[in-house]
Length: 258
Image (cartoon, rainbow, N blue to C red):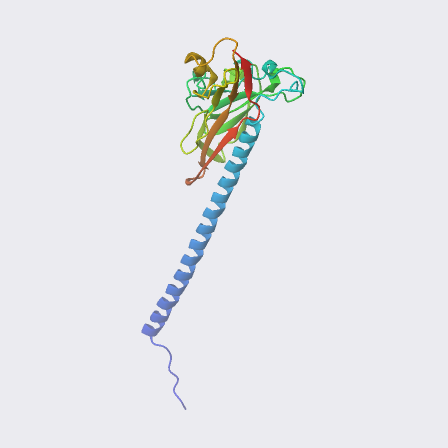
């Protein structure tokens, strides 16, 4: 009769320890893979949401100044959507939804977190109150303006605003608009005196007039450019952040007689 032998206690403990090491390594690799995949999904989601928002903002701003009466033989100087401060593009700095600290930063060539503009959405050639649009940074989210009575006021009293990106999902930390170069964005609004064929020497027609480059009776064309910087992060994970930038060339030049 052959006597059977089993494993000693030390051998069993060594085997258990090796098994725990293998299991621990497997779990560690699994957790690392899951976390990496989760971070990738979060980053992709943030980039998609910010990219879609930037595309929407840029595509709508491009339409600023569209005039249904701009047919063959018409005078572009009669475009009511670019003729005055109540309808032309304006950039503001908004502290809250009810307080505007800088009324019109466009004239001073300063960046702002709110942009207002108008275009003839119903193609009737008349500026209606529901044809003044805009975007603003408000409480770490982005609002879009559906209607408004003026382009000189970004507060709630200046139009009807709706939340475009909810702060419950994304935390928008930066939204900047500028008619001058902004960071790595080189675009600049230029003022052209078409009467004298003078080269552009100022960034806005208002500054050109102040500098004496435009006199009464001169015809002027303002080629408007808006630089945009948008930065956001996930509300539930501030480490996942992304920045989108873009430059918009307004398709409709502002043409007027001084």
